[in-house]
Length: 187
Image (cartoon, rainbow, N blue to C red; front, side, top):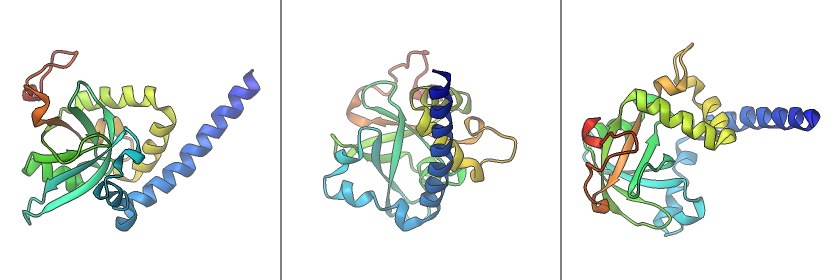
């Protein structure tokens, strides 16, 4: 039993290292990072799975529409998605949402739904990422490895990576509370 567990742990570690390097390369290579957009534009976003969404936002300088495909790290309630910037606070989509929180969201089931972005406080991001790591340990190991170059030395990604909560405009009252009693307005 221990031998299998040890082998499984070694395999997960290798997957995290290789996957982390591949993901970091993917994030640094614009044409690769943008490649999933074509699937959403053709109505095939559902094939990327329920943990992905396409976010359309407004460029803070240009005022032009911009699009990015992101992983959903948590859905605290129906019509609400939390996404994390793996590139840290310098990510263009994150900076654009801070300047213009109105956006549009497409998932495998929804297309082009108006939403509003709310920054998630860092103490809550830490809890979100801890829950994500528990639910998806291999994916977290890959993400953690990929984000190393964007996180200051000696700092945990859970203390550095910013997140936003995307609340669909038709999801009802955005003041709906989370399980911990917080609302987007509290953030």
